[in-house]
Length: 260
Image 1 (cartoon, rainbow, N blue to C red):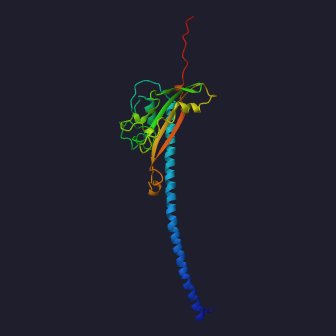
Image 2 (image 1 turned 135 degrees about the vertical axis):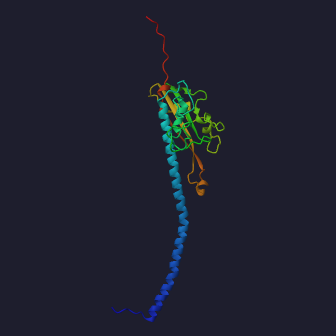
Image 3 (image 1 turned 180 degrees about the vertical axis):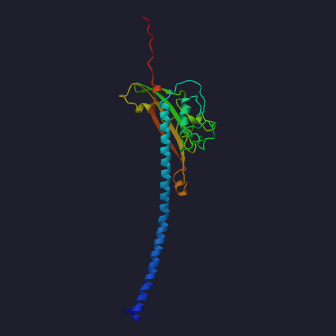
């Protein structure tokens, strides 16, 4: 095939067209770089935010599972049993409140356990690590007669807070505080009035319940500066569960029946 040759005038026109297109192409590339520079930080913030939200939701669900497991444990035991007790999660001696809290301890063999002598070990908590300078577990037992709470245990003070009984005596009543240590509440979430608002008149007249509350401070995983400017690095997670407790059901006072 015979090659096609352009005339001098056609070659000059082609060169002028290429010369005009080059600045236009450079302008498009520059515009793309500017757009990318504007979009990439926004995308990074969105990705970091999604990761942080996912981590927070994971911690929330882990805390919810723990509080449910603790309530199940407590619902099968007697809060009024009086016997030899100790504050150790691995011994046979039983303490209703402390052993319920033991559910939140790491399982045996977990690196967070210091060994067989560690009093707060042998639980099921592989996910969250309690910081007893700010975290807390509150347990309350309710006795109900005719749709009204008639008794609360332990009494006084009407609730059990683990921070008042752990080895850290400098930080008691953590459930009253936010993650910065400021007092934000004066009563646990579950009180007699709160329970009364949940009771149904169609249920049996005599009942017993145990309420377990978990106050846990979630610390941001990534601690991205832009997110930390708007969201605190530590966020309070408060989860709770109420379950029936047959041992707290009041029994009728027996009447003396004379012998025939």
